[in-house]
Length: 521
Ligand code: ADP
Image 1: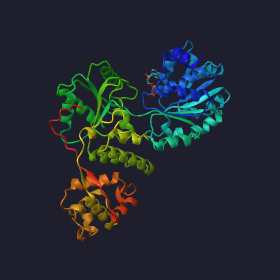
Image 2: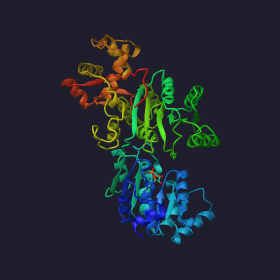
Image 3: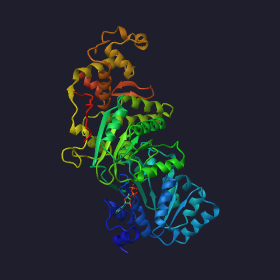
Image 4: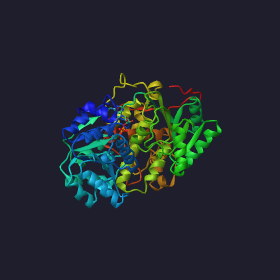
């Protein structure tokens, strides 16, 4: 049967979505293939269809047991033979494992889902190398990279295992699109020759907005939700405690909200999730435990009470809005204190992991504080160029609708960079700010900084100004924070050059939102 016939017969679809057809053809012609598509882009079909069409069994490596089960059930639903798809993992008993093996040997099984830790087992490797394998698909391939947001050491060894099984094509699939992660995946899987298919990550119907997080944040949220009566939304918080607090505040204010986090028992979680899906409530207040695999098409807003720890997470979570193509407002409350909180959480992790964590956070800070087109910033992060004048959704963010004021801060940048240099690059931002405004403390006294002629050189501005400027020159690449030294600020090559030959530096003023903001976009 031809490709479209199979698509129709097996999945009931008349058309391929996006790049699916090209991907399927690449796999059918036995080439290594790398697929980067945002969540919901239709990645599963890319390997399921060729697996069902090709001779032999396709091995699908996936980290999430629950999702594997769903997929196997879905595939079984389209066939008369339940042996067409199997999961192989440690929960199977001997009889079940034997059934799986028999089905594979008899050529019945087209898709075999395995967790990476099961695939490593000698017994399975030995068995699989004697079978006809069509290809190996590696789902959530970013788990292979330490630069991804979900690194899993078991993924590192996959290349070797696959080589032992057979010399078959490899298909990597992910929704994480940064250059670094992509390179890592191709290198680690030994497939630099792969055909690469990358779909656009632009979600043109989403409106991106970042507001300063003040003491009024709860009032802001209530006002925002009340302006959208009957609309579905998700509010993400960092902690379970906050989830419960916010849910309660909303309920007291007449908003139909339920809390959701991993601390509730399975029954309560399922009930609250169902209430949301069935529209018995409007709003779910949740930790990131909510959302994996939920697919409600008409979520009209996603609010981040706390900013996520990476732009990947931000993209995933905001991506749950507007899946039907309709309105989707993504509102994030941002305060630098929250970044420091996230940094503190990382303090006990191994240094290498901290380094990655800080770099990811720095991108979040950059995004939150940028005055440029947010969609452009986000897509640039995912390695995609975006035309911020004519591109789809070009005016759909707060910076474009309501531009932030900027002013020339060349002299101030020279001042702060010179102070960093003259204090021998030994201070953290807080000490630097105190030096600028001339505020004494024990550390500054012990290094005799308080006696220096430059102590208090920036007295004409307040501490908030200097802290904001430090963050902006950090994002601009003039300074970096030394992780091993707990955030001590160092000058970069660019920073040193700026002192000698200063150029224009437009500092963005903090966006102050009017309290009578009517919330429309
Ligand atoms: P991903 O794994 O990329 O997040 P999925 O494979 O779960 O995406 O697919 C997302 C949705 O798109 C599913 O509901 C799926 O049924 C649907 N879908 C996939 N391919 C097609 C197609 N060719 N035509 C219509 N719908 C499709």
